[in-house]
Amino acid sequence: RFRNVTGVQTCALPICPLLAFTSLRVALSAVWTVHVLVMAVYFLRLLALSGVRARLLRLVLLVVYLYSPVAMAYFFDTDWVTSAISWSLYPVIVLHLHRAVMGGAARHFWASAVGLSLLMAFWILNAHAGYIAPMVLVLVIYTVVVAPLDRRVYACLVAAAVMCAAATAGYLYSLAHEALLLPPGTALERGGLTPGAFVQSALSVGRQSRRGPFLGLALWIAFAVGAVRSRHWQVPHLRGCIIATISAVMLACAPQAVAAWIAPSGAGLFRDPAFFFALLLGGATLQSLVDTPPTPAEWRRHDARRGSAGATDDRDRGTQPARLLRSSRHAAVLSPPGARHRSRTGACRRGTDTWLARVPVAASG
Image 1 (tube, rainbow, N blue to C red):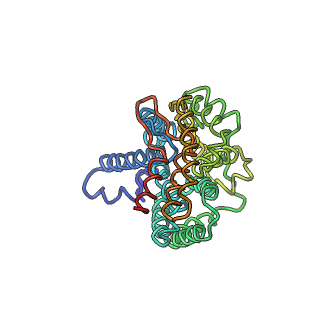
Image 2 (cartoon, one colour):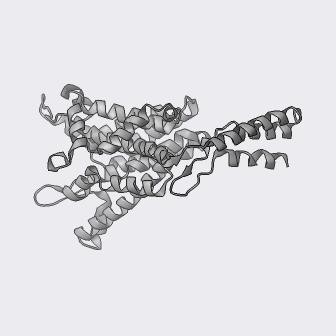
Image 3 (cartoon, helix red, strand yellow):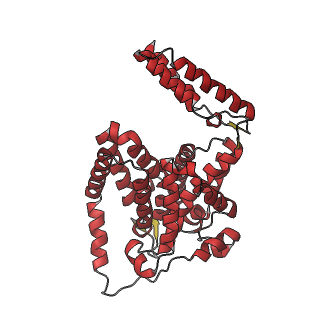
């Protein structure tokens, strides 16, 4: 760590090597640029994972994310370098955790475990301990909701946690040692938020709400609409966003006696992960407004394909290639025409019926 003469922390570990070649201002600007690019790239990947396909909508959500009160406060309004690093690496952690639990652990067990442990260790060592605690708790809730009930997946997560704890053992020991040096009965008088704070921040923008849970009234409404849609609960990632946001809002309003154990720097910090996951689900809901619903003609063609597939199944039962072809027809036909929405921006999303129908043909040919 590097501290100036006033004792205020002005530089974190990733910046220190650059100080040998340039000034603190240039080094800090270089680190900020890299972190903003990383958080932008991975947030766009999370938007794609959430089903946001319209380019204009992705651009709008990216601007909301990069110029949110959270990012503005850490990157421009304060000198909390470690908090900015914690926030900028959050989409990286979320995306790699999702990849690990949704197939990575099953296919590449040790590669996923080692990768997650190194990524989490780098995040913890360069983050603010009081700020990262609520973010990790919400991340655990998201992971448990998204992860399938598979012993191999949970074994991978446990192995990654053990290796991460071993890599950060010295840092965690120093934190515990410093905490024990505090006088007995020391209390951190940092209260949380109230439900009225979320309502007030959604209805007003000003200096008093620069560190409030500001997301915007439109996106909060989009989140509320998306949270009650049954199809969002069927997608693990979107279901995790819903549960993580609701949990973060409830924890942000937790009493001080509870917050002292789960968020030493204040329960109000739960507003940041609540903003993050609510923005992802709100984007998925707004995408449904951009999509054009299927027309009656598309429904008629869909019904006609169902009838033709049923008639063909009676003729080609028996052989393995025929069964593969029959399963591909069902995958292509039984999905409703809404599975291939046409965006009003002119872009067309390739539905699952396109690539599913090719695999059995190649296997049987």
